[in-house]
Image: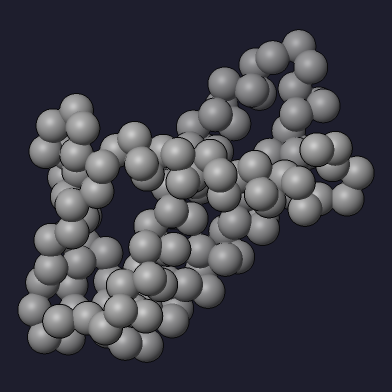
Length: 119
């Protein structure tokens, strides 16, 4: 069993990890755009910031012997996250659209914090 604050940290880690995966996937597409030199520095900065946050969260979870084992897509709406803890493995179910929305909010909030960002 994991405590509430560990679950919050785990959720934060999941959102950051998903954001990194999304940015890396989009990066490959944006590299091929004519104006890629405009967009790529923004993505680089986002990836740096979010990677650091993700690493910090993962490190804190590891201290408590908590780690993500894998994702399993159950259907088009939900995915299960298999988590190993010191005591037992957990399965947490996430709604895919809710996760996507949280990743978007995270990325937008980081973008708005960047110097020179316009809201």
